[in-house]
Length: 165
Image (cartoon, rainbow, N blue to C red):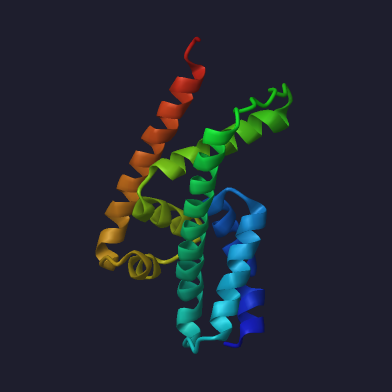
């Protein structure tokens, strides 16, 4: 598969995956672009291009998230945090839910996050197993556990958010 074909076939899914991973559409586009640049430098068999792209995207996104967190920690020590005013419309509510989901995902281990995001993108268990380094027969149980941990993290955030001040 040549790179233009891979781009047409996988770009949208890679962007969705990277946005979920990073929480930022601009960063996601940069990460996916870099993954395709790296694909140009490789000779990957056609049947391995999709998993390869997702693994590289996950690695690049993870590195970017780490850099962003370090930068945020530095900024927090240097400037006061300004609270955003809440908006009463549905867009604000949706934004809060999306943020809660992203934060709950961030609390998961790297493996759990990868399992859930790859599952959401429709990867087969064999592909997920290759990406996280486990046997395909254990992916179902690992995904179920990761989903339970995500649900608990999300619920804990919701309870903390709903608690009276």
